[in-house]
Each structure stands twice: as C-alpha cells, then as structure tokens.
Image 1 (cartoon, one colour):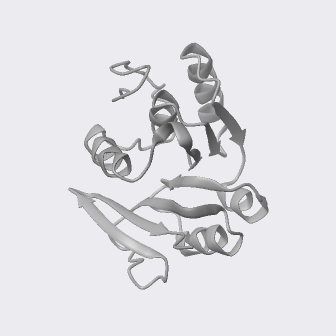
Image 2 (cartoon, rainbow, N blue to C red):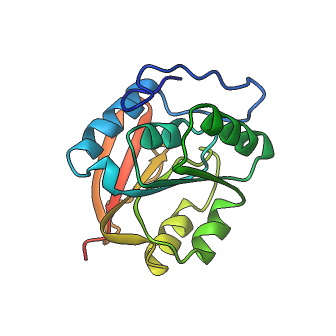
Length: 179
C-alpha cells in the first residue's frame, strides 16, 4: 500500500502477510479521497477509522494533516502494526485503540467529521453500526459516515443516506449528519 497525498506522499508501507485483513485497494482509496477532497479541508477534521486493519485509511488522513485520527481494531497484530507505523511516519495526530468497533461506537461520546468503516465482508449486523453512529450522535453537523461493504448491503432507504459509489467489486455508501 502507498500513501497518495500529504506529508508522506508516495511512501510505501508493507504490512505483514500474517494480518487477517483486506485493505482498501489503491483505486478505491484514491477515488474515496477524491470525493472527500471536494467536501472537507483535511487539516480541519477529526476522523474515526473503524476496523482499521493495516491502518491504510488512517495513514492517508494523518498524512493529509487531519487534526486527529482514531484507528480502532480488535486484532492485536493490527493495532501493534498501526502504532509502529504511525511512530515511524511521525504521525502525532494518529491514536490507536484495540477494541471492538461496535462497542466503541456504542460507548463513545466524541464527535467526528468523518467516520470510515471497512468491516470484514462476512461480518453481520452492519446496520447496527450505522444505528449506533446516528443514535449516539457521533458525527458533527455535516459529518460523513463512509462504509465500505459488499454489494448485498443497501443503505439507500436510510434517512441519512447521501450516495453510493461502486468501483469494481468495491462499494462505498455515504451517510451524512444533515443537521
């Protein structure tokens, strides 16, 4: 994986093959950040990366100067790798939490401008994650919840649905706090 923009632009990061992850592809990440770039000033936002895996998305936000990036993953190998990489890349704005994403959004009272969630495709109950984000008001007004998900999910009937983007087998749904 590589960092596309920001202070670490072009930097390649090699994640251990032993991590149980499916990182967002470079095409998907580039497309996502092209969209986000039209709506947000990266140096003014706070970000939550759920199911952070290798930290691919977290590094991109941190490199682009996000105020803070919180990466959450329940696998120790992933959180250790993200911490080590963040230290090596001198990302003072990136913090890592080892824990369950569902439990985190259920308990958190912090607000974010962007929440990105890329759960394992076989994970059931993604709707509950969306419900917790909006019930607990984790998004600032105008904030986005971006979900990477398999094609079987359809969030178009959700009251906060904004758009769906498809890039090959990759699906992103965007839900917005319209306040």
